[in-house]
Length: 380
Image 1 (tube, helix red, strand yellow):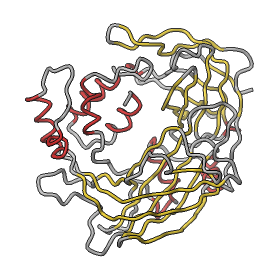
Image 2 (cartoon, rainbow, N blue to C red):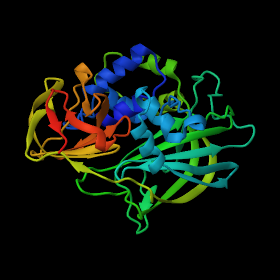
Image 3 (cartoon, rainbow, N blue to C red):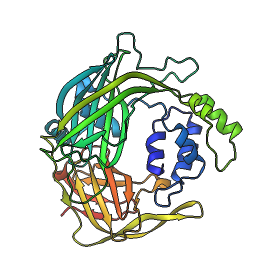
Image 4 (cartoon, one colour):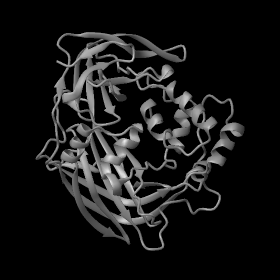
């Protein structure tokens, strides 16, 4: 598990501010580029990454699934152009199946051809509790709801049987109905960065296969106790099997399989190439003396779409990460009216970085891209 995995997991941990800050600091010092997965948090996460998820509070009932979600991403109102993109691109699906007393359904989906967000609705028996933890001694927040085959081969495949290859995340999404026995999940899929490819193009059918619904609970107090007492000051350690089960007990809610077909017929898959000639900018290029090492790189492609970008540099031996974590500076899409949309580097490999937009990017309104070091890349 590398830096992006740490950030994705621990951005959702229900933990004290001190623990949260300590974990993120350690996470930022373990990078995918240098494969430093043997440090403290690397070992901790292997045993305890499946932890309580903070609810993403999207006012779905009032705004539509993705209007509320994207507003919450950056806490700023959506522009008319962003709302228009969402209304045009979001697909209401409303298909469901019931297995072992639990109904799972695909409610809605949106994509720009490369990033796909899918909302899954869960309804359990009348006496089920999904909205909070009911295990005595564990955190009262809602448990993490996962599927047995999450992230495994066959979870998402196309009509020819080719499996999805890339990064995926699963988050709890508030459904707004006030019921304990219902919960929504947000599945996000980002394929490995390959310039020019449109995996979720209109007409390409994808099959979603889900197995065995599970809830994972989290004992923050016990985890803090272990890290402060038993493992304090140790460079390399891992929880014992007994400790791992106590930190994060797993309960099977329902056994069975749920299968759906997805066709992103309404996807807006426009992509704009910004680079006319190579552009020099600052990027993390490696790891040295316990810190990120920065250097100059040459961007040869910046393919911008509505929900993110694929950025390719000249040196394929570098996994480029343009984020300036020390100063909380990220790539920005600057619109003609001066407003900004953050693009976060979510993954990097072999000279290519995948960026994810916090809100939809109205391509016709973009003036330029601003890199964290101040370098500007104008729209063509």
